[in-house]
Length: 406
Image (cartoon, rainbow, N blue to C red):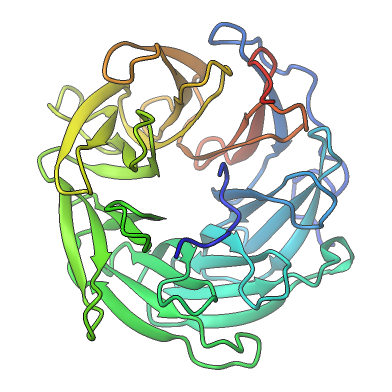
């Protein structure tokens, strides 16, 4: 059963030098529009210790999408309150907690119909979740709960109901731990009950992405995962036998350095495909990498065909949405190395054919995680992203030319 969680499309005391809470007004078209004039750029926050991890969800229940963001070396997890038009005010979910808050996911962990935040602590190898009181702007910090302290170099996280008990469980990857695992929601998640850890794959060298989708059409949630050093992109099926073991299905084991991607029905045929970024640290000119690609699901996840979306040196992450309103899915990609950049690839209408690349932001060192969400309420999908060392910023790009969704 796939969960009703808060996906990006569907993660007090001021830090020295950071803009004061309440002062994060969007810059009026701070950079000239690029990529057919589709987007205008706005700064949300800068002067992070190390900016990594972003998600979009309506945290305060006012009908617009807020943003969450991790400051890895600033020992903080933020949420940015949206006034409904894309102007953001910064608040703390947690502050002064070492351990490197990074990627995170948003969903209702304790069943009170309020979106909570589950986040990895990369350095310490912990998974924790923060409970939304329903009035998050009034909270100096959210109530903290521990899922596990046993996930070496915890890296990525996704929420889904894996055991069909109606509660959101947590699946996560372990970067230097080289494995992926899931943790069963105990049901009374606020009472300190233990989350049981079950291994999914004990050896996936430098595990990165973890995402959920039904790849074989059986109505049960599967998992997408990558191993950057293993050169493996795979999906994992939880078997229906009594042991509920996991079966790995390889999507690609020939393309070097798969990093981050997303399950999505890119060709509109009713099954889940995968869009993927390859080559975060790949050498220039290395074949079969330094690109954004998509994998066509040829039937129930048993066979896959790789298609090129476009070249992107040092590609880090790829996500998809209909950005221009022409009823096909476009792709946003980030490039981590080189000068760093954010681009979007325009779908020509045939995802197996020509894509047109447009630069949204160039010369943005260490661009990492993007999300796509309507941040100003105009029914057009916008883009937000973080960039780490050399930039240490959270920015968003307003979609000004796309056709609004009905």
